[in-house]
Image (cartoon, rainbow, N blue to C red; front, top):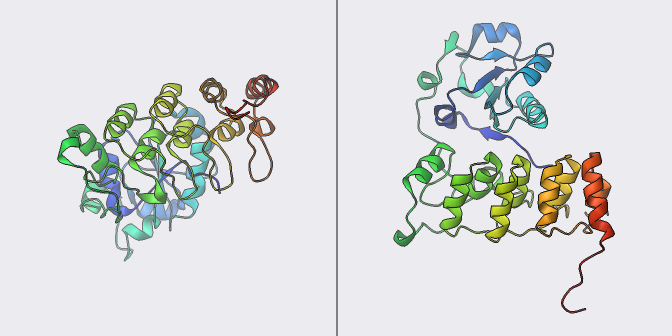
Length: 290
């Protein structure tokens, strides 16, 4: 199963998400007549005619929130924006129907007025509450709360099984990654697709963050549910800088997925292909038992 590269927000989480992203691009994927009837204030209607200009014109660093009728089409759009390199994309679970349950809203709606409630209750987790000797720093508390996690359980998984460390790695939040690592959160945790924090860091693509995670002990050659490694993901995504970083850290280019494909087989760009050819020509590393 392919790793989703966007966040799914429940209505109760929208205000907190927007609070730390005041410049977010709001996109309404419903028909024009429904958008005209009611919509989130400041949102732009997204359709088959303007999406290309939005994808090309907007900064890839600008956060994007997409909603549709029921939360189905918005996932397709969110995948598209993620594929085009937007690093902070979310869609609304349940769509506009989850907000306007009775169809009585008219005109632009301010999120703070429409969704005044607190964050949804975090998922129940068996992760231990952090001890007093490892107090969660205030900045991390604020970040965890804003991102929908329980500040008292910084090792607990949330949506899709992603832990705060995975989420921070995906967002490229280096300071939060360091803070979580200092709290000794689990380094071998995996999400519902079997991916670890290193995979999510590779999705973001910042080499320094990848090096930090590996140096602190996050498994380099971990394989997910389909036996794909982070190196295979980076190669298949054409992320040459990530491939080079992983190879320099000692990632094994000879490993194969459940379909018997190696990272070299999956290379999506000439630069990735050249890097992996050079690495595989060196041959597999010998174990200490040989």
